[in-house]
Amino acid sequence: MNRIRLPFAAILAALATLVLPVRAEPVIQKTVCPACHGKKSLSLTPPNLGQYDGEIGVTPGRPFTTHRFDVKYKTCPLCDGLGFHETYRLTVKPPADAADLDPCPDCRWAGVTACRKCKGSGYLTCAKCQSGGAGKDGKPGWIVTQKSTTTGMRSAMKHSKMLVTPCGTCSGIGRIVCPDCAGRGGVLCRKCKGDGGVPKKEKR
Ligand SMILES: [Zn+2]
Ligand SMILES: [Zn+2]
Ligand SMILES: [Zn+2]
Ligand SMILES: [Zn+2]
Image (cartoon, rainbow, N blue to C red; front, side, top):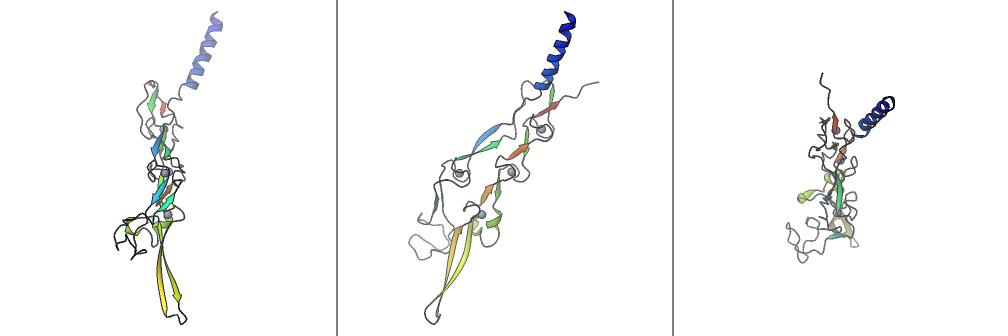
């Protein structure tokens, strides 16, 4: 009997050590989309840079009092119309059943560490419209172009028309989903591979 029991118990113990260390699964939470605030559709008001001066509801240099010029998206481009993003919870409570584990020094039970590229936010400032003429008026996301048109037989009349259009990369939102973490704000911890804890060092 003893001959059979001992190896069996040993196998059980070995299995337990194989299974038990996986305690913490990285926690995924829903974070409300910062562009549409959960509405799933999006309406963006362009900055008033003088492109509609003279029209009703337009005061030069002031925000528009009309929503005629708004750019409307049925499907919010930042969250693809979901209204939220799935993000990793970067700080978690210690698990109750982790007697044989120490918190992972890199992620402290979370199993994930903050994405370096977006510093944990899940979003990046759109690089395309932050440069050049856009981003004026404290409103990134818009591309400003001057269009010169010449009318009249003798080119006597030269018109300069200003165009304010949504950036082709971020659709006028001014930020994009971080490609490194797919908007989750975190990446799986390399040290503990997502467990959140590391085996306790044996005392000698
Ligand atoms: Zn959205
Ligand atoms: Zn990221
Ligand atoms: Zn942009
Ligand atoms: Zn870790």
